[in-house]
Length: 550
Image (tube, rainbow, N blue to C red; front, side, top):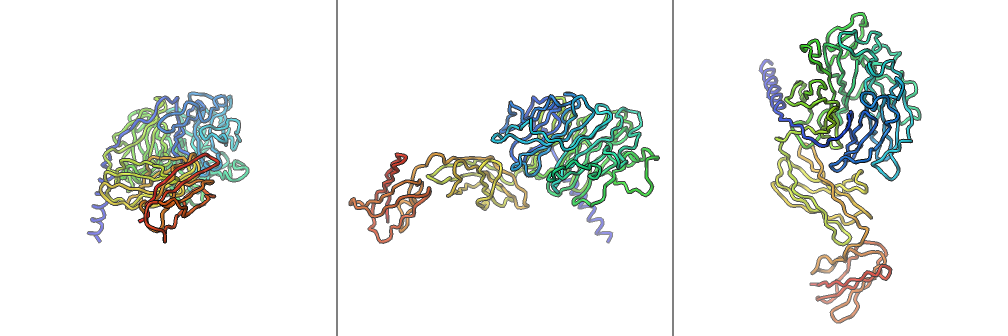
């Protein structure tokens, strides 16, 4: 038994050491934002960045769109510190068009959670007049007190909302003196869970308390793979903490201990309830009084579930606004609060649709990406292109290397948002060339991407290519020369097709009623050269093909 424990300990140490060997880099993505506070995705390739001054901007195809997605600047309290705090897109956003905004109301000490809609016919613009108020939280001191500030949809489909304890934020003063965070008769210092599918999701909010005992949970996130909840809760003077709940959640309201406890230490004994089970933090690190008088303010983040950097998989990343340091907790639970990476005035983390991680600088107005350049990709894609051949699309791609790689899934979409798998091609190893033919493309525009899947099930996407059948392609014959059956492709409705022998006799004819192909049966006909005439009276199209029957 002793030998077994030693072996397990050595294995855990080795794994932890391998997890620790991350050469992280902050890669700039976009700049020019004004006090950005939140970055997220809407289940597509765009990123949405909320600015505290009331605007939500779209980062699309490598650039920030000039026109804001939403501008509610006239509705907010203060464009520098008390405006938009958070935004959230539900899992069904692509079909419903609904999204949610949390902001501080102009001339009031209220935090408002409202639902908005995107504009019909323009996915890059929201309807500013579509606001439906879901929940209003009246704070006593919005600018000076803690008001939480985040929203996110969990794996269960519910909308989670964090609130602050409404206590003073100054150094050296008692935190949460009214014990708001432990009072289930108040919304302060809580995590709420709302069912947005109901007609009135914000009704009876006290009945929707999911967790209590929080001080100022400015940023929290869900593990997109497991559903686990990670909360960054800003401490009072002594400790910053990361809280955690595993999914699926129990039906019991969770209590994280503030302000009986700060971190794992007793803070106010008089606010401790005998027999209450407090949930210990996943991680604490020194705050102001335990850190030589240096400020600290934890920024909760996300578990990396992208596919670009395999060595980051399962690591929970978080940061600190005051120091700018970025840290992580590895899959074994070993924490490294300082990973040798910093980002000035780090205000928030975010994920794109593929699970890659981003950071925002509040004062510098920049959006950046967390990368690990030394991470080798199982497959390196050199090119991916689309070629129209008649009424078909031929997809061609090449790889430079393949290691521990499984296969490609070909995915197609009518709108560049919702994709379906239309084919699978196995990996051939090393550097290889591949082709795939979509014989029945969508009318108008078809969008394609490769889902590149490794042996361990992780994956990443290629860039998207597209083709449009708005204008007909050129008809073709395949195979040519051919045998007993030759396909005449690229035909359109209304085409008249006539096949003549070398002596000028008509041997086959067909009036085409649907776009597509005609399989010409050559069995029993003399071997030789034939001429195919394709005419369309309605469109004026005319073409001649030569085919050989051998």
